[in-house]
Length: 236
Image 1 (cartoon, rainbow, N blue to C red):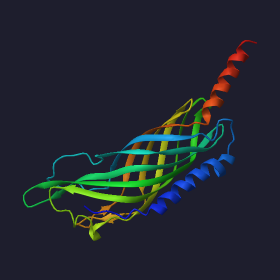
Image 2 (image 1 turned 135 degrees about the vertical axis):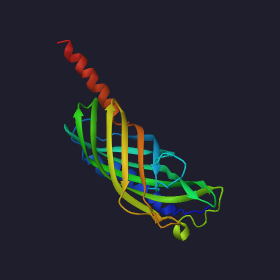
Image 3 (image 1 turned 90 degrees about the vertical axis):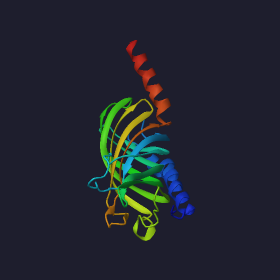
Image 4 (image 1 turned 180 degrees about the vertical axis):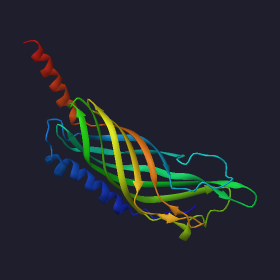
């Protein structure tokens, strides 16, 4: 088992920036009555670390490490045709990989814990404020604060220098549907850098897919008001 030092001050700085930005700076960039929703998010993540497919190894999915994502999400703006999102979260990542031993292969389970910030400023929107679909992208950054390797064989040398880099960043692609105050969203994230190398010098590069649901508080009352206004107009 190996651990990356926690650096708690960095985590507090990341979440403080997110909260201040969401409630202050980004609240000023609102182009429709329903822009600026803010609330919790929970999701399921399936990840891998670019593990190679070893000849003769048991068959297994490349994207086979499952984890959870928990955090906060804010809508930074919304217009008729576009919107932008900002998210900070705790994420469980990793991979299940095969390592050859003397006679066969042994499974190695790599568990990573991280905090992530993602901004998707370019999301094209189709629909109205009450219900619409959206798709686009942006960038993400992660800070790994814990690393654990589990296997029936010694794993001290599984990663060169016995650890991975703490910082990772890359492309974040998002698509989702907004209904009332809820966002149901799919993410595909691809790292732009190697965060380490295995014992055989193969590169470790993060890649994961996630499905999440968020409840955006600010939108709730505005949506109800709009619905009442529509009903009252039908009477005349």
